[in-house]
Amino acid sequence: MIPPISIDGTDITGVTIDGTDVQEITVDGTPVFSAFAATLFAGSRDDDLYSLNISDGTEVWSFTTGGDIQSDISSDDTAVYFGGGFGDNNVYKLDIEDGSQIWSFTTGSAVNGLKIDDNAVYAGSNDNNVYALDISNGSQLWSFTAGDGINSVQIDDSAAYAGSSDNNLYGLDISNGSQLWSFTTGGAVRSGIAVDDTAVYVGADDDTLYSIDKNNGTENWSFSASDRFRSGIAVDNTAVYAGSNNAKVYAVDKNNGSELWSYTAGGGIRSGIAIDNSAVYTGSAFGSRDAVYALDINNGSELWSYTAGDNVRSGIVVDDSAVYAAGDDNKVYALDINNGSELWSFTGGGSFVSGLRLNLPK
Image (cartoon, helix red, strand yellow):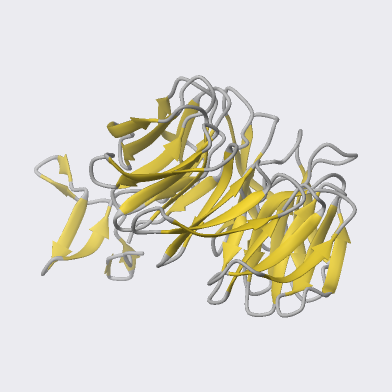
């Protein structure tokens, strides 16, 4: 982030020249002041993508699509990228500052998984296709067709990975979309996908979490639970973190798939999973208690929890001070990262089940 400018120890929060607000100051091409607030992007089933000021949850802008938004959300310095749901079917690129549309690309059905790199937007659709789109103009670079809808997408420098309702995880050449390998599970692949230097981690509706060699698609190990894995997946140097519809959050040894710990929440784990050095953050749904949780990353003990008004099925994102989550109660929440107390909430016109994305000015 751009450090604040101080005069006599007082931070400057705005700059005006001849009555005009200055949006950014650069010195030798390097930004030293930015008036653009840090924002959180959230997509709702009221068909709107919202940009919210993370300091107080006020709406910066909103953009209306033709269908509910359930996709991942990505952003770079200038734009935000996401997909529209059933009835819309588009991949969108919007100006990050004002929400104006830069381009859109129409797929054949609702858009689910979505990731970006410097060159392309990679989007998975219920029309069974993964699309790579030129990030500057939205033109199609390539597509890959699976046997059923694409639910999740992940990328690294050399490959795109896609989870499908045809029970397969696909590894695709990121440059041209050709299939490198496929791995067949015993159920639809609806979880998030995590990747590190050697493996891809994914869960399936066969109640199993998998580690798959990312070079050839062979199984490293599998871990079985008593219900489906449909949560986000996170990985660090020690463990893979995933949640199941059996209401448990699991930490599994990334080297051999043995259980390190588990925590039982108040409902199924269908939300994203975020981690930092000290905690695992997730949400629960369709149970006795719909909540956001912070768990000790070393042993799974509960650090705090916050009861939401309905199912928590959105992405989960964190920064140094807050955890951000959203629910079927039409609310986006910012919670104190240390104790889970509510910092603010924003109410939209529909439930929130999309990914969430933080944008912090540089």
